[in-house]
Length: 351
Ligand code: SAM
Ligand code: DTB
Ligand code: SF4
Image 1 (tube, protein in one colour):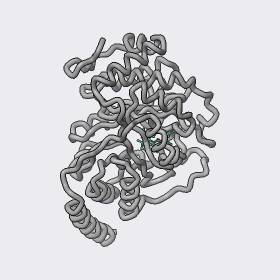
Image 2 (cartoon, protein in one colour):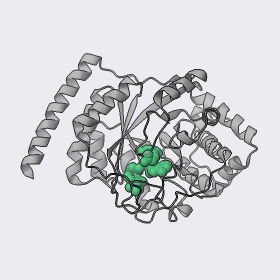
Image 3 (cartoon, rainbow, N blue to C red):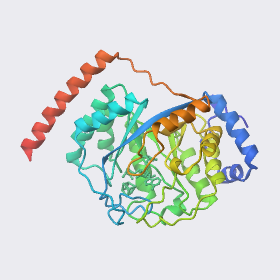
Image 4 (spheres, helix red, strand yellow):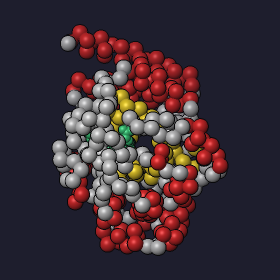
């Protein structure tokens, strides 16, 4: 059933997806490798660095999340980070080898007053020659357009799990809300990053249900993060039982087969995985990682350990080509910083 460029399917059925999950492990891995090699260089991974631009005190009740105001996880709540500080972190991420900078905010959705700041972050981070990604919660059509106009490359908004299991995890926003945000992001012309979390007590049919939703979208998400639950003390899922590591790898392999052209990200949870398991995830078709010592609020493997692992596996990092040279990028950065200072001036004056 080898997929080719003109046989990318959007009509996968739940039965077909369940059948992939039920394959003997080696058969599933083989199929995933065959598909992976048709669409990607199997020895290349894309690397993204995360930055929490607004931490904690989130009004939503996602049971896995250390940033929800409803659970006491000992997290200091913070204001929206200053644009200059974000740019500084983006520069450091670039210098340590990341090609995409993902900015996350613990919001239900951005408020009107936040938009000039976040669009200014996008312009300035982009001017450094990095790809930009944001995850700010739900977006209305106009907000998606504003971000797209600022040049945002990717928007991350996860479906998290199957429609059936979703209500056990989040009650403050619906599955439909999430699908609406994703279609607003697509309509605005940005790339979609959407995936989910495994290890929350869901069943295999829920992992199949999540991938079914993603793989039957009119256009597959360009990037599909598969997170393994990071169990954080104080959250309702803190004592969730271990997930069988092979079930995690199966989820990656099935995602690879269903969405051959998408980057599948071996996302949160690597701190708990040994190197063999990470290597197996790459064999199953994962070709992107979060890189840098911290995810949003929880630890991630050290950058030099990751580089050492990639070296040992003969895996190179994917390049991101920008059209401008360094001098032109610096000039764009200077101009956008100046524009940002003006925005700030008008914002402060209007307060
Ligand atoms: N507040 C925004 C939202 O939820 O849309 C953006 C930030 S939120 C932290 C982004 C994603 O991180 C969530 O959708 C979830 O998939 C993932 N996430 C959060 N906490 C996690 C955890 N403990 N383990 C694994 N993934 C997690
Ligand atoms: C995604 O799918 N995983 C990232 C990113 N998108 C924003 C977040 C993982 C968060 C893990 C828990 C934390 O560090 O707070
Ligand atoms: Fe808030 Fe996002 Fe965490 Fe849910 S996942 S509590 S929306 S920060």
